Image (tube, rainbow, N blue to C red; front, side, top):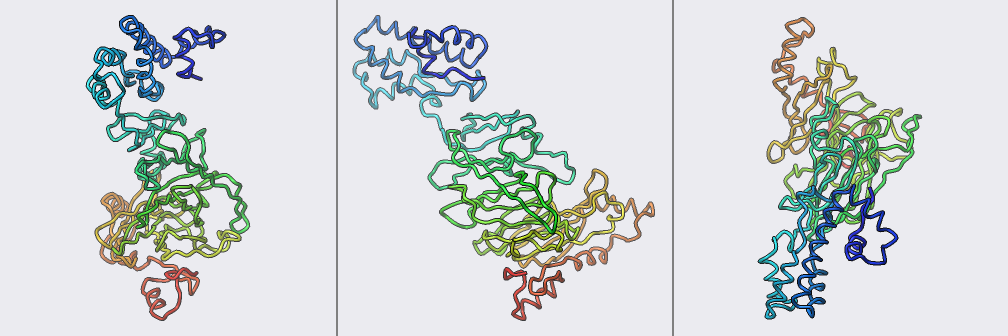
Length: 477
């Protein structure tokens, strides 16, 4: 619905000849639109009171209108009608006229306005503090919870639906993965950054969009590529799936890391680094599979953040993790020739890790295990959740790493242990969950050695590093 702008509505209230040819159209619209009707009523009441003021002090009319022009304007369609803050009532104008000592637009006059007017109307905080997907709308709030603006996105755009995806492998999709309020250029005010790659019919599914504090668009980055992996072509159809905002230890600017997967499925996938202030692409990295989770952590406690991504590698049919020592990522992930993108150089990852299948593979419904999340376990320690999917359920093994990305231990979540023992009792599995079981998995974690162009154990990778060769740690493979 197209609404009547405030200027036209004001001319309508004043019976101006300028809009005489639109009068019937406006009258019909006011019968259908509650927002415009509320604003029309407010304007009518204001000018009725102004007439009263004219009667009392006709010579003060111009002053009254001057005060009217200074009032804070609000968008009646940005919130439910019950939440629409009212403009300063005309009785304030009457107060100023009746008290000449404060009748000029001065500090004293403004103080009188403050006494008679709700604070949120005169001094409304217009800086976005957070944003939410709510009942088909992107809604932006200030720090007090007051709604600043909203934009319609489409069916299914709601935090409750997005928090718990139908995909049984995904843990959740918290709001900060797709919607953030951040000061991207350190100017003291927050921008709002959003992606919309999850829903059918939503706008800008292949884009990262940055909005100014007032809701107007600041910049838009649209991801567009035609790719060939091995001999398989992929059309230029991409969905933005996840984003993070990070300063990577810099005090000046923030970057946005966004992931894009192919529109026909999750493979292949690219991660792109954008300049937060301009939306300009700085670098990109191609992955032969899905990256379900992207985080930044200062694992080595040296003030610099590493970028860590986990998911699955389609070429090797195994769960995977990639670690970058800085945000300057580029190239492509390790992959067999059939899964290697054409005309893309080798990647500069610090570590690329593959996680072994466990014996639930015998009953699994998915062709590979999937690493789905990364959690910090104190200084220099992380754990990675790796899932085997059986039916519509996921059973998780936890892999623990130190700051050098050495796998130091493996164990299973209670749900995994219970399910495994059930299958043991039914004779469907023969291995027992003892220390040897977990140690076998730990020793089976593989690391890409760029110097040898193959995956090796952590011990072998360490020997390569000590020998002075250049493994994936030093950006080559």
